[in-house]
Amino acid sequence: MTAGPGGAAPTAISDHFRSVDSAPAGISVNRPPSAANGFLVTFAGLCIVAMLVMTYLVHTGVTDKHDLILLGEDRGDVAVPTRLFVVVFFVTYAAYAYTNGWRRLWIGASLIGKFAAVSIGFDVLAWLLHSVQLVSLPPFAQQLASALVALAILPHTILRQARLPSRDTSATSPYTPAGAYVCLVLCLVVAVIAAVVAVEVFFRAVVDLRQWALLGGIGPGVFLVQQVFAASTALFGWRAVRRSRRARFAPPVAVLVPAHNEAHDIADTIAAVDRAAESYRGTVRLYVVDNASTDGTTGAAERAIAACATITGEVLKCPTPGKAVALNLGIARISEEFVVRIDADTVIGPGCIRTAMSHFADPRVGSVGGMPLPAEEKTWIDKVRLVEVYLRHGFFQVSLDGYRGVLGVPGMFAIYRRSAVVAVGGMVQGMNGEDTDICIRLGSAGFYTVADPKAVYYSETPRTYAHLREQRTRWFRSIYHIAAHNRGSLLDRRSMTGAFVLPFQLVNAARRAMLAPLLLFAVIAFAGFRATFTELQWQPVVATVLGMPLIMTVFVCLLWSPRALRYVPAYLCFRVLRSYFTLAAALSLVFPPMRPRTRLPRVLIRGG
Image 1 (tube, one colour):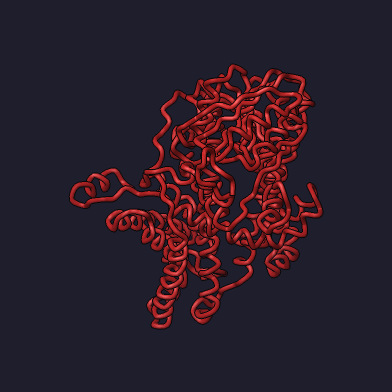
Image 2: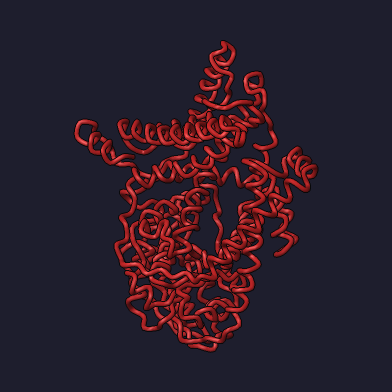
Protein backbone atom coordinates (compact mmCIF):
# COMPACT_ATOMS: atom_id res chain seq x y z
CA MET A 1 0.00 0.00 0.00
CA THR A 2 1.12 3.58 -0.64
CA ALA A 3 -0.18 6.38 1.55
CA GLY A 4 -2.09 9.26 -0.01
CA PRO A 5 -1.23 12.89 0.73
CA GLY A 6 -2.92 14.72 3.55
CA GLY A 7 -4.44 11.57 4.97
CA ALA A 8 -5.89 10.37 1.71
CA ALA A 9 -6.75 6.71 1.49
CA PRO A 10 -3.77 4.56 0.54
CA THR A 11 -3.58 3.10 -2.94
CA ALA A 12 -3.03 -0.62 -3.28
CA ILE A 13 -0.08 -1.39 -5.53
CA SER A 14 -2.14 -4.15 -7.13
CA ASP A 15 -4.60 -1.46 -8.32
CA HIS A 16 -2.06 0.82 -10.00
CA PHE A 17 -2.94 -0.53 -13.42
CA ARG A 18 -6.52 0.76 -13.23
CA SER A 19 -7.09 4.12 -14.93
CA VAL A 20 -9.53 6.08 -17.06
CA ASP A 21 -7.56 4.88 -20.09
CA SER A 22 -8.45 1.22 -19.55
CA ALA A 23 -11.82 1.30 -21.35
CA PRO A 24 -12.62 4.70 -22.90
CA ALA A 25 -16.27 5.52 -22.29
CA GLY A 26 -18.68 5.32 -25.19
CA ILE A 27 -16.49 3.18 -27.46
CA SER A 28 -15.59 0.33 -25.10
CA VAL A 29 -16.79 -1.33 -21.96
CA ASN A 30 -15.17 -3.28 -19.13
CA ARG A 31 -16.95 -6.59 -19.56
CA PRO A 32 -16.37 -9.24 -16.90
CA PRO A 33 -14.59 -12.52 -17.71
CA SER A 34 -18.02 -14.17 -17.91
CA ALA A 35 -18.50 -12.57 -21.34
CA ALA A 36 -15.57 -14.39 -22.97
CA ASN A 37 -16.27 -17.52 -20.91
CA GLY A 38 -19.92 -17.47 -21.93
CA PHE A 39 -18.86 -17.02 -25.55
CA LEU A 40 -16.75 -20.19 -25.41
CA VAL A 41 -19.48 -22.21 -23.67
CA THR A 42 -22.11 -21.08 -26.18
CA PHE A 43 -19.68 -21.64 -29.05
CA ALA A 44 -19.08 -25.21 -27.85
CA GLY A 45 -22.82 -25.86 -27.63
CA LEU A 46 -23.44 -24.47 -31.12
CA CYS A 47 -20.56 -26.56 -32.45
CA ILE A 48 -22.20 -29.73 -31.13
CA VAL A 49 -25.58 -28.74 -32.62
CA ALA A 50 -24.03 -27.88 -36.01
CA MET A 51 -22.07 -31.11 -36.10
CA LEU A 52 -25.17 -33.13 -35.19
CA VAL A 53 -27.07 -31.47 -38.05
CA MET A 54 -24.20 -32.17 -40.43
CA THR A 55 -24.10 -35.79 -39.26
CA TYR A 56 -27.82 -36.16 -39.95
CA LEU A 57 -27.50 -34.63 -43.45
CA VAL A 58 -24.57 -36.85 -44.36
CA HIS A 59 -26.02 -40.06 -42.98
CA THR A 60 -29.40 -39.50 -44.65
CA GLY A 61 -27.71 -38.88 -47.99
CA VAL A 62 -28.86 -35.26 -48.33
CA THR A 63 -25.25 -34.26 -48.90
CA ASP A 64 -21.84 -35.83 -48.96
CA LYS A 65 -20.11 -32.50 -48.43
CA HIS A 66 -18.82 -32.22 -44.89
CA ASP A 67 -17.83 -28.56 -44.86
CA LEU A 68 -20.56 -26.53 -46.58
CA ILE A 69 -18.83 -26.91 -49.94
CA LEU A 70 -21.63 -26.54 -52.45
CA LEU A 71 -19.80 -27.23 -55.70
CA GLY A 72 -16.79 -29.40 -56.37
CA GLU A 73 -15.70 -32.76 -57.59
CA ASP A 74 -13.49 -35.02 -55.50
CA ARG A 75 -13.55 -34.13 -51.82
CA GLY A 76 -9.84 -34.45 -51.42
CA ASP A 77 -8.10 -33.73 -48.16
CA VAL A 78 -10.44 -31.63 -45.96
CA ALA A 79 -8.40 -31.70 -42.76
CA VAL A 80 -10.76 -29.60 -40.63
CA PRO A 81 -14.29 -28.37 -41.51
CA THR A 82 -13.14 -24.76 -41.63
CA ARG A 83 -16.26 -23.20 -43.10
CA LEU A 84 -18.45 -24.77 -40.46
CA PHE A 85 -16.14 -23.32 -37.81
CA VAL A 86 -16.32 -19.82 -39.31
CA VAL A 87 -20.12 -19.88 -39.44
CA VAL A 88 -20.42 -20.97 -35.80
CA PHE A 89 -17.83 -18.40 -34.71
CA PHE A 90 -19.62 -15.57 -36.52
CA VAL A 91 -23.01 -16.56 -35.07
CA THR A 92 -21.57 -16.69 -31.55
CA TYR A 93 -19.78 -13.37 -31.92
CA ALA A 94 -22.99 -11.69 -33.06
CA ALA A 95 -24.86 -13.20 -30.10
CA TYR A 96 -22.32 -11.80 -27.60
CA ALA A 97 -21.72 -8.39 -29.17
CA TYR A 98 -22.29 -5.53 -26.70
CA THR A 99 -25.51 -4.07 -28.07
CA ASN A 100 -29.23 -4.81 -28.31
CA GLY A 101 -30.94 -7.73 -30.02
CA TRP A 102 -31.71 -6.04 -33.31
CA ARG A 103 -28.13 -4.94 -33.80
CA ARG A 104 -26.94 -8.47 -32.96
CA LEU A 105 -29.21 -9.83 -35.68
CA TRP A 106 -27.78 -7.34 -38.17
CA ILE A 107 -24.18 -8.11 -37.18
CA GLY A 108 -24.84 -11.83 -37.64
CA ALA A 109 -26.56 -11.28 -40.99
CA SER A 110 -23.66 -9.12 -42.19
CA LEU A 111 -20.99 -11.62 -41.15
CA ILE A 112 -22.78 -14.70 -42.48
CA GLY A 113 -23.96 -12.96 -45.64
CA LYS A 114 -20.48 -11.79 -46.61
CA PHE A 115 -18.94 -15.17 -45.81
CA ALA A 116 -21.64 -17.05 -47.76
CA ALA A 117 -21.11 -14.81 -50.80
CA VAL A 118 -17.35 -15.35 -50.67
CA SER A 119 -17.66 -19.12 -50.23
CA ILE A 120 -20.15 -19.47 -53.08
CA GLY A 121 -17.91 -17.33 -55.26
CA PHE A 122 -14.92 -19.60 -54.67
CA ASP A 123 -17.05 -22.72 -55.24
CA VAL A 124 -18.41 -21.39 -58.53
CA LEU A 125 -14.91 -20.45 -59.62
CA ALA A 126 -13.61 -23.93 -58.78
CA TRP A 127 -16.52 -25.56 -60.62
CA LEU A 128 -15.99 -23.40 -63.72
CA LEU A 129 -12.26 -24.07 -63.82
CA HIS A 130 -12.94 -27.78 -63.52
CA SER A 131 -15.70 -27.68 -66.15
CA VAL A 132 -13.45 -26.13 -68.78
CA GLN A 133 -10.71 -28.60 -67.76
CA LEU A 134 -8.32 -25.77 -67.01
CA VAL A 135 -7.43 -26.77 -63.44
CA SER A 136 -9.04 -28.73 -60.61
CA LEU A 137 -9.01 -26.92 -57.30
CA PRO A 138 -9.31 -29.33 -54.37
CA PRO A 139 -11.84 -28.53 -51.64
CA PHE A 140 -8.90 -27.78 -49.33
CA ALA A 141 -8.02 -24.82 -51.57
CA GLN A 142 -11.63 -23.64 -51.48
CA GLN A 143 -11.59 -23.94 -47.68
CA LEU A 144 -8.32 -22.10 -47.36
CA ALA A 145 -9.32 -19.23 -49.63
CA SER A 146 -12.66 -18.65 -47.91
CA ALA A 147 -11.06 -18.92 -44.44
CA LEU A 148 -8.46 -16.29 -45.30
CA VAL A 149 -11.17 -13.92 -46.50
CA ALA A 150 -13.14 -14.61 -43.30
CA LEU A 151 -10.20 -13.13 -41.38
CA ALA A 152 -10.88 -9.85 -43.20
CA ILE A 153 -14.68 -10.04 -42.91
CA LEU A 154 -14.63 -9.78 -39.09
CA PRO A 155 -12.62 -6.53 -38.80
CA HIS A 156 -14.42 -5.08 -41.83
CA THR A 157 -17.78 -5.62 -40.14
CA ILE A 158 -16.52 -4.26 -36.82
CA LEU A 159 -15.16 -1.11 -38.44
CA ARG A 160 -18.44 -0.58 -40.29
CA GLN A 161 -20.81 -1.18 -37.37
CA ALA A 162 -19.06 -0.62 -34.01
CA ARG A 163 -18.99 2.73 -32.23
CA LEU A 164 -15.34 3.67 -32.66
CA PRO A 165 -13.22 6.84 -32.58
CA SER A 166 -14.13 9.32 -35.29
CA ARG A 167 -11.96 9.60 -38.36
CA ASP A 168 -9.00 11.95 -38.23
CA THR A 169 -9.74 14.67 -40.77
CA SER A 170 -6.25 16.18 -40.94
CA ALA A 171 -4.73 16.58 -44.37
CA THR A 172 -2.37 13.72 -45.21
CA SER A 173 0.81 13.63 -47.26
CA PRO A 174 2.43 10.25 -46.55
CA TYR A 175 5.74 9.45 -48.15
CA THR A 176 7.23 6.03 -48.76
CA PRO A 177 10.37 5.84 -50.89
CA ALA A 178 10.37 3.57 -53.91
CA GLY A 179 13.15 1.51 -52.35
CA ALA A 180 10.80 0.39 -49.57
CA TYR A 181 8.33 -1.01 -52.09
CA VAL A 182 11.17 -2.67 -54.01
CA CYS A 183 12.32 -4.35 -50.77
CA LEU A 184 8.76 -5.47 -49.98
CA VAL A 185 8.11 -6.97 -53.42
CA LEU A 186 11.57 -8.53 -53.71
CA CYS A 187 11.32 -10.25 -50.32
CA LEU A 188 7.78 -11.43 -51.07
CA VAL A 189 8.88 -12.97 -54.38
CA VAL A 190 11.84 -14.65 -52.68
CA ALA A 191 9.53 -16.00 -49.96
CA VAL A 192 7.07 -17.45 -52.49
CA ILE A 193 9.85 -19.08 -54.51
CA ALA A 194 11.43 -20.50 -51.35
CA ALA A 195 8.08 -21.93 -50.23
CA VAL A 196 7.43 -23.52 -53.63
CA VAL A 197 10.93 -25.02 -53.71
CA ALA A 198 10.58 -26.32 -50.17
CA VAL A 199 7.22 -27.96 -50.86
CA GLU A 200 8.18 -29.41 -54.26
CA VAL A 201 11.86 -30.30 -53.90
CA PHE A 202 11.73 -31.35 -50.26
CA PHE A 203 8.28 -32.90 -50.47
CA ARG A 204 9.13 -35.89 -48.27
CA ALA A 205 10.56 -33.65 -45.56
CA VAL A 206 7.50 -31.39 -45.72
CA VAL A 207 5.22 -34.41 -45.33
CA ASP A 208 7.21 -35.60 -42.31
CA LEU A 209 7.13 -32.15 -40.71
CA ARG A 210 3.37 -31.97 -41.23
CA GLN A 211 2.94 -35.38 -39.62
CA TRP A 212 4.72 -34.05 -36.53
CA ALA A 213 2.65 -30.82 -36.58
CA LEU A 214 5.81 -28.78 -37.15
CA LEU A 215 4.58 -27.37 -40.44
CA GLY A 216 1.16 -26.43 -41.64
CA GLY A 217 -1.99 -25.09 -40.11
CA ILE A 218 -3.88 -23.31 -42.84
CA GLY A 219 -1.32 -24.67 -45.28
CA PRO A 220 2.45 -25.26 -45.23
CA GLY A 221 3.07 -22.91 -48.13
CA VAL A 222 1.29 -20.00 -46.42
CA PHE A 223 3.30 -20.39 -43.24
CA LEU A 224 6.57 -20.76 -45.11
CA VAL A 225 5.92 -17.64 -47.16
CA GLN A 226 5.12 -15.60 -44.05
CA GLN A 227 8.21 -16.66 -42.11
CA VAL A 228 10.66 -16.49 -45.01
CA PHE A 229 9.32 -13.05 -45.85
CA ALA A 230 9.82 -11.89 -42.25
CA ALA A 231 13.35 -13.30 -42.12
CA SER A 232 14.44 -11.69 -45.39
CA THR A 233 12.98 -8.28 -44.55
CA ALA A 234 14.59 -8.50 -41.09
CA LEU A 235 17.99 -8.62 -42.79
CA PHE A 236 17.20 -5.40 -44.63
CA GLY A 237 15.79 -3.90 -41.43
CA TRP A 238 18.83 -4.69 -39.32
CA ARG A 239 21.09 -3.19 -41.98
CA ALA A 240 18.99 0.00 -42.16
CA VAL A 241 18.80 0.45 -38.38
CA ARG A 242 22.51 -0.17 -37.89
CA ARG A 243 23.39 2.36 -40.59
CA SER A 244 21.02 4.97 -39.12
CA ARG A 245 22.40 4.38 -35.63
CA ARG A 246 25.90 5.47 -36.69
CA ALA A 247 24.88 9.13 -36.95
CA ARG A 248 25.94 11.58 -34.26
CA PHE A 249 23.00 13.72 -33.23
CA ALA A 250 22.56 15.17 -29.73
CA PRO A 251 20.24 18.20 -29.53
CA PRO A 252 18.53 19.18 -26.25
CA VAL A 253 15.72 16.84 -25.25
CA ALA A 254 12.79 17.01 -22.87
CA VAL A 255 11.82 13.87 -20.97
CA LEU A 256 8.10 13.63 -20.18
CA VAL A 257 6.99 11.18 -17.48
CA PRO A 258 3.19 11.05 -17.06
CA ALA A 259 2.53 9.62 -13.59
CA HIS A 260 -0.67 8.52 -11.90
CA ASN A 261 -0.17 7.07 -8.41
CA GLU A 262 3.45 6.09 -9.06
CA ALA A 263 5.07 7.13 -5.76
CA HIS A 264 6.25 3.57 -5.19
CA ASP A 265 8.68 3.40 -8.13
CA ILE A 266 9.00 6.77 -9.87
CA ALA A 267 12.35 7.41 -8.15
CA ASP A 268 13.85 4.45 -10.05
CA THR A 269 12.54 5.86 -13.34
CA ILE A 270 14.06 9.29 -12.67
CA ALA A 271 17.41 7.84 -11.53
CA ALA A 272 17.60 5.80 -14.75
CA VAL A 273 17.04 8.96 -16.84
CA ASP A 274 19.87 10.63 -14.92
CA ARG A 275 22.22 7.73 -15.69
CA ALA A 276 21.23 7.71 -19.38
CA ALA A 277 21.92 11.47 -19.58
CA GLU A 278 25.56 10.90 -18.57
CA SER A 279 26.35 9.30 -21.95
CA TYR A 280 24.25 11.78 -23.98
CA ARG A 281 26.11 14.84 -25.22
CA GLY A 282 23.06 17.13 -25.32
CA THR A 283 21.17 18.60 -22.38
CA VAL A 284 18.33 16.66 -20.80
CA ARG A 285 15.52 18.22 -18.82
CA LEU A 286 12.92 16.12 -17.03
CA TYR A 287 9.23 16.94 -16.63
CA VAL A 288 7.12 14.72 -14.41
CA VAL A 289 3.43 15.30 -15.09
CA ASP A 290 1.46 14.35 -11.97
CA ASN A 291 -1.78 13.13 -13.52
CA ALA A 292 -4.43 13.41 -10.78
CA SER A 293 -2.47 11.23 -8.36
CA THR A 294 -3.92 10.50 -4.92
CA ASP A 295 -0.69 9.24 -3.36
CA GLY A 296 2.68 10.91 -2.82
CA THR A 297 3.81 10.95 -6.44
CA THR A 298 4.72 14.66 -6.51
CA GLY A 299 6.83 14.52 -3.35
CA ALA A 300 8.63 11.35 -4.43
CA ALA A 301 9.39 12.85 -7.85
CA GLU A 302 10.70 16.14 -6.42
CA ARG A 303 13.04 14.32 -4.04
CA ALA A 304 14.32 12.09 -6.86
CA ILE A 305 14.95 15.10 -9.16
CA ALA A 306 16.86 16.89 -6.40
CA ALA A 307 19.14 13.86 -6.08
CA CYS A 308 20.05 13.80 -9.80
CA ALA A 309 23.61 14.66 -10.82
CA THR A 310 23.21 15.29 -14.58
CA ILE A 311 19.66 16.40 -15.35
CA THR A 312 17.39 19.16 -14.13
CA GLY A 313 13.65 18.94 -13.89
CA GLU A 314 10.34 19.90 -12.39
CA VAL A 315 6.90 18.48 -11.59
CA LEU A 316 3.88 19.69 -13.55
CA LYS A 317 0.34 19.30 -12.29
CA CYS A 318 -2.38 17.83 -14.52
CA PRO A 319 -5.66 17.55 -12.57
CA THR A 320 -7.58 15.99 -15.48
CA PRO A 321 -7.12 12.18 -15.58
CA GLY A 322 -5.82 10.56 -18.75
CA LYS A 323 -2.35 9.79 -20.05
CA ALA A 324 -2.90 11.59 -23.36
CA VAL A 325 -4.13 14.64 -21.45
CA ALA A 326 -0.97 14.64 -19.33
CA LEU A 327 1.28 14.22 -22.38
CA ASN A 328 -0.39 17.08 -24.25
CA LEU A 329 -0.01 19.34 -21.23
CA GLY A 330 3.69 18.51 -21.07
CA ILE A 331 4.21 19.00 -24.81
CA ALA A 332 2.57 22.41 -24.56
CA ARG A 333 4.88 23.47 -21.71
CA ILE A 334 8.27 22.42 -23.09
CA SER A 335 10.43 24.20 -25.65
CA GLU A 336 12.78 21.40 -26.72
CA GLU A 337 12.29 20.00 -30.23
CA PHE A 338 12.57 16.35 -29.16
CA VAL A 339 10.31 14.73 -26.59
CA VAL A 340 11.32 11.54 -24.79
CA ARG A 341 8.20 9.89 -23.44
CA ILE A 342 8.73 7.43 -20.57
CA ASP A 343 6.15 5.64 -18.44
CA ALA A 344 6.57 6.03 -14.70
CA ASP A 345 7.07 2.28 -14.23
CA THR A 346 9.84 2.07 -16.86
CA VAL A 347 13.62 2.07 -16.33
CA ILE A 348 15.63 2.96 -19.43
CA GLY A 349 19.08 1.55 -20.15
CA PRO A 350 22.23 3.72 -19.82
CA GLY A 351 22.63 4.26 -23.57
CA CYS A 352 18.93 4.35 -24.44
CA ILE A 353 18.57 8.07 -25.18
CA ARG A 354 21.87 8.29 -27.08
CA THR A 355 21.05 5.27 -29.24
CA ALA A 356 17.49 6.31 -30.07
CA MET A 357 18.32 9.98 -30.71
CA SER A 358 20.92 9.10 -33.35
CA HIS A 359 18.15 8.16 -35.80
CA PHE A 360 16.74 11.69 -35.79
CA ALA A 361 19.71 12.87 -37.85
CA ASP A 362 17.42 11.88 -40.73
CA PRO A 363 14.82 14.69 -40.93
CA ARG A 364 12.22 12.17 -42.16
CA VAL A 365 12.26 10.29 -38.83
CA GLY A 366 9.33 11.35 -36.69
CA SER A 367 9.42 8.79 -33.87
CA VAL A 368 11.78 6.17 -32.46
CA GLY A 369 11.27 3.31 -30.02
CA GLY A 370 13.29 0.48 -28.52
CA MET A 371 12.96 -2.96 -26.97
CA PRO A 372 10.87 -3.25 -23.76
CA LEU A 373 12.41 -6.09 -21.75
CA PRO A 374 10.65 -7.16 -18.54
CA ALA A 375 12.21 -5.74 -15.38
CA GLU A 376 12.38 -9.18 -13.74
CA GLU A 377 12.21 -12.87 -14.65
CA LYS A 378 10.45 -14.25 -11.60
CA THR A 379 6.84 -15.01 -12.49
CA TRP A 380 5.47 -16.94 -15.44
CA ILE A 381 4.19 -13.63 -16.83
CA ASP A 382 7.74 -12.21 -16.78
CA LYS A 383 9.11 -15.24 -18.58
CA VAL A 384 6.57 -15.42 -21.39
CA ARG A 385 6.85 -11.66 -21.80
CA LEU A 386 10.61 -12.01 -22.34
CA VAL A 387 10.10 -14.45 -25.22
CA GLU A 388 7.28 -12.33 -26.61
CA VAL A 389 9.50 -9.21 -26.61
CA TYR A 390 12.33 -10.97 -28.40
CA LEU A 391 9.91 -12.12 -31.10
CA ARG A 392 7.93 -8.92 -31.44
CA HIS A 393 10.55 -6.23 -30.92
CA GLY A 394 13.76 -8.13 -31.59
CA PHE A 395 12.60 -9.70 -34.83
CA PHE A 396 9.24 -8.71 -36.35
CA GLN A 397 9.63 -4.98 -35.64
CA VAL A 398 13.11 -5.15 -37.22
CA SER A 399 11.59 -6.83 -40.27
CA LEU A 400 9.16 -3.90 -40.54
CA ASP A 401 12.15 -1.54 -40.40
CA GLY A 402 13.33 -3.20 -43.61
CA TYR A 403 10.60 -1.57 -45.70
CA ARG A 404 9.60 1.38 -43.48
CA GLY A 405 6.55 -0.44 -42.23
CA VAL A 406 6.79 0.11 -38.46
CA LEU A 407 3.22 0.89 -37.43
CA GLY A 408 4.07 2.23 -33.99
CA VAL A 409 6.30 1.87 -30.95
CA PRO A 410 5.21 1.33 -27.33
CA GLY A 411 4.61 4.46 -25.28
CA MET A 412 6.62 3.00 -22.40
CA PHE A 413 9.62 4.62 -24.10
CA ALA A 414 9.33 6.62 -27.30
CA ILE A 415 10.91 9.77 -28.72
CA TYR A 416 8.99 12.16 -30.95
CA ARG A 417 9.84 15.18 -33.06
CA ARG A 418 7.83 17.79 -31.13
CA SER A 419 7.06 20.14 -34.03
CA ALA A 420 5.63 17.22 -36.03
CA VAL A 421 3.48 16.06 -33.10
CA VAL A 422 2.09 19.57 -32.66
CA ALA A 423 1.46 19.84 -36.41
CA VAL A 424 -0.71 16.70 -36.46
CA GLY A 425 -2.73 17.77 -33.42
CA GLY A 426 -0.94 16.17 -30.47
CA MET A 427 -1.85 12.97 -28.67
CA VAL A 428 -5.38 11.77 -29.28
CA GLN A 429 -7.56 11.47 -26.20
CA GLY A 430 -10.38 9.10 -25.33
CA MET A 431 -9.18 5.95 -27.10
CA ASN A 432 -6.77 3.07 -26.64
CA GLY A 433 -3.49 2.91 -28.53
CA GLU A 434 -2.57 6.60 -28.52
CA ASP A 435 1.11 5.62 -28.77
CA THR A 436 0.61 3.77 -32.06
CA ASP A 437 -1.91 6.33 -33.26
CA ILE A 438 0.57 9.21 -33.06
CA CYS A 439 3.11 7.22 -35.08
CA ILE A 440 0.53 6.54 -37.79
CA ARG A 441 -0.47 10.20 -37.94
CA LEU A 442 3.18 11.22 -38.12
CA GLY A 443 3.44 8.79 -41.03
CA SER A 444 0.48 10.50 -42.68
CA ALA A 445 2.42 13.77 -42.39
CA GLY A 446 5.41 12.33 -44.27
CA PHE A 447 7.54 10.98 -41.42
CA TYR A 448 8.35 7.40 -40.51
CA THR A 449 9.05 5.43 -37.34
CA VAL A 450 12.20 3.50 -36.41
CA ALA A 451 12.22 0.59 -33.94
CA ASP A 452 15.78 0.01 -32.66
CA PRO A 453 16.17 -3.10 -30.46
CA LYS A 454 19.50 -1.76 -29.18
CA ALA A 455 17.62 0.98 -27.32
CA VAL A 456 16.83 -1.30 -24.39
CA TYR A 457 14.58 -0.38 -21.50
CA TYR A 458 12.90 -2.33 -18.71
CA SER A 459 9.23 -2.10 -17.93
CA GLU A 460 6.98 -3.45 -15.22
CA THR A 461 5.01 -6.54 -16.18
CA PRO A 462 1.57 -7.35 -14.73
CA ARG A 463 1.78 -8.71 -11.21
CA THR A 464 -1.59 -10.44 -11.24
CA TYR A 465 -3.80 -12.25 -13.70
CA ALA A 466 -6.38 -9.45 -13.40
CA HIS A 467 -3.74 -6.89 -14.39
CA LEU A 468 -2.62 -9.07 -17.31
CA ARG A 469 -6.18 -9.42 -18.54
CA GLU A 470 -6.81 -5.66 -18.30
CA GLN A 471 -3.54 -4.84 -20.06
CA ARG A 472 -3.99 -7.25 -22.95
CA THR A 473 -7.67 -6.44 -23.47
CA ARG A 474 -6.69 -2.77 -23.73
CA TRP A 475 -3.77 -3.50 -26.06
CA PHE A 476 -5.74 -5.79 -28.38
CA ARG A 477 -8.76 -3.48 -28.46
CA SER A 478 -6.53 -0.65 -29.64
CA ILE A 479 -6.12 -2.08 -33.16
CA TYR A 480 -9.78 -1.26 -33.89
CA HIS A 481 -9.51 2.18 -32.30
CA ILE A 482 -6.44 3.23 -34.26
CA ALA A 483 -7.78 1.73 -37.52
CA ALA A 484 -11.02 3.67 -37.16
CA HIS A 485 -9.24 6.91 -36.23
CA ASN A 486 -6.90 6.51 -39.22
CA ARG A 487 -9.40 5.33 -41.83
CA GLY A 488 -7.91 7.79 -44.28
CA SER A 489 -4.63 5.86 -44.23
CA LEU A 490 -6.19 2.44 -44.80
CA LEU A 491 -5.27 1.10 -48.25
CA ASP A 492 -3.56 4.38 -49.17
CA ARG A 493 -0.87 3.22 -51.60
CA ARG A 494 1.30 6.22 -50.68
CA SER A 495 1.66 4.87 -47.16
CA MET A 496 3.40 1.56 -46.46
CA THR A 497 1.77 1.27 -43.04
CA GLY A 498 -1.68 2.18 -44.36
CA ALA A 499 -1.58 0.09 -47.52
CA PHE A 500 0.01 -3.04 -46.10
CA VAL A 501 0.82 -3.16 -42.37
CA LEU A 502 -2.40 -1.84 -40.80
CA PRO A 503 -4.68 -4.11 -42.89
CA PHE A 504 -2.42 -7.05 -42.03
CA GLN A 505 -2.64 -6.23 -38.32
CA LEU A 506 -6.44 -6.15 -38.52
CA VAL A 507 -6.47 -9.56 -40.19
CA ASN A 508 -3.97 -10.84 -37.64
CA ALA A 509 -6.21 -9.64 -34.79
CA ALA A 510 -9.06 -11.70 -36.24
CA ARG A 511 -6.80 -14.74 -36.61
CA ARG A 512 -5.67 -14.43 -33.01
CA ALA A 513 -9.23 -14.07 -31.71
CA MET A 514 -10.21 -17.26 -33.54
CA LEU A 515 -7.31 -19.41 -32.30
CA ALA A 516 -8.74 -20.56 -28.95
CA PRO A 517 -12.23 -21.25 -30.43
CA LEU A 518 -10.59 -23.17 -33.29
CA LEU A 519 -8.79 -25.44 -30.83
CA LEU A 520 -12.08 -25.99 -28.96
CA PHE A 521 -13.86 -26.73 -32.24
CA ALA A 522 -11.22 -29.30 -33.19
CA VAL A 523 -11.42 -31.04 -29.80
CA ILE A 524 -15.21 -31.40 -30.14
CA ALA A 525 -14.94 -32.69 -33.70
CA PHE A 526 -12.25 -35.23 -32.81
CA ALA A 527 -13.93 -36.37 -29.61
CA GLY A 528 -17.45 -36.93 -30.93
CA PHE A 529 -17.70 -36.68 -34.69
CA ARG A 530 -14.86 -38.61 -36.27
CA ALA A 531 -17.35 -40.81 -38.09
CA THR A 532 -18.91 -37.76 -39.78
CA PHE A 533 -15.74 -35.84 -40.58
CA THR A 534 -13.78 -38.78 -41.87
CA GLU A 535 -10.87 -36.73 -43.17
CA LEU A 536 -10.13 -35.00 -39.87
CA GLN A 537 -6.44 -34.52 -39.06
CA TRP A 538 -5.05 -33.25 -35.78
CA GLN A 539 -1.74 -32.04 -37.20
CA PRO A 540 -2.97 -28.86 -38.96
CA VAL A 541 -4.77 -27.74 -35.80
CA VAL A 542 -1.84 -28.37 -33.46
CA ALA A 543 0.48 -26.72 -36.00
CA THR A 544 -1.34 -23.42 -35.50
CA VAL A 545 0.16 -23.32 -32.00
CA LEU A 546 3.34 -25.23 -32.70
CA GLY A 547 4.62 -25.55 -36.26
CA MET A 548 6.34 -22.48 -37.62
CA PRO A 549 5.61 -20.44 -34.46
CA LEU A 550 7.75 -22.94 -32.51
CA ILE A 551 10.52 -22.93 -35.10
CA MET A 552 10.64 -19.13 -35.32
CA THR A 553 10.51 -18.72 -31.54
CA VAL A 554 13.46 -21.05 -31.05
CA PHE A 555 15.39 -19.31 -33.84
CA VAL A 556 14.84 -15.81 -32.40
CA CYS A 557 15.69 -16.88 -28.84
CA LEU A 558 18.94 -18.39 -30.10
CA LEU A 559 19.76 -15.04 -31.72
CA TRP A 560 19.05 -12.88 -28.69
CA SER A 561 19.36 -15.04 -25.56
CA PRO A 562 19.66 -18.84 -25.61
CA ARG A 563 18.68 -19.00 -21.95
CA ALA A 564 15.20 -17.82 -22.99
CA LEU A 565 14.69 -21.22 -24.64
CA ARG A 566 13.64 -22.48 -21.21
CA TYR A 567 10.53 -20.33 -21.45
CA VAL A 568 9.45 -21.33 -24.96
CA PRO A 569 6.96 -24.06 -23.85
CA ALA A 570 5.29 -21.59 -21.48
CA TYR A 571 5.16 -18.98 -24.24
CA LEU A 572 3.48 -21.40 -26.68
CA CYS A 573 0.80 -22.10 -24.07
CA PHE A 574 0.48 -18.37 -23.46
CA ARG A 575 -0.39 -17.91 -27.14
CA VAL A 576 -3.70 -19.67 -26.45
CA LEU A 577 -4.36 -17.43 -23.43
CA ARG A 578 -3.45 -14.43 -25.58
CA SER A 579 -6.09 -15.56 -28.06
CA TYR A 580 -8.62 -15.60 -25.23
CA PHE A 581 -7.70 -12.01 -24.33
CA THR A 582 -7.95 -10.96 -27.99
CA LEU A 583 -11.43 -12.43 -28.14
CA ALA A 584 -12.33 -10.59 -24.92
CA ALA A 585 -11.07 -7.35 -26.51
CA ALA A 586 -13.32 -7.82 -29.56
CA LEU A 587 -16.26 -8.46 -27.22
CA SER A 588 -15.54 -5.24 -25.29
CA LEU A 589 -16.32 -3.06 -28.31
CA VAL A 590 -19.59 -1.14 -28.20
CA PHE A 591 -22.11 -1.39 -31.05
CA PRO A 592 -24.84 1.25 -31.23
CA PRO A 593 -28.33 -0.18 -30.59
CA MET A 594 -30.62 -0.55 -33.60
CA ARG A 595 -34.35 0.13 -33.79
CA PRO A 596 -35.83 -1.62 -36.84
CA ARG A 597 -38.62 0.86 -37.51
CA THR A 598 -36.37 3.90 -37.71
CA ARG A 599 -32.90 2.64 -38.51
CA LEU A 600 -33.10 -0.69 -40.30
CA PRO A 601 -34.14 0.65 -43.75
CA ARG A 602 -31.36 3.24 -43.71
CA VAL A 603 -28.77 0.63 -42.76
CA LEU A 604 -30.06 -1.74 -45.41
CA ILE A 605 -29.59 0.95 -48.03
CA ARG A 606 -26.04 1.71 -46.91
CA GLY A 607 -25.01 -1.89 -46.28
CA GLY A 608 -23.27 -3.44 -43.23
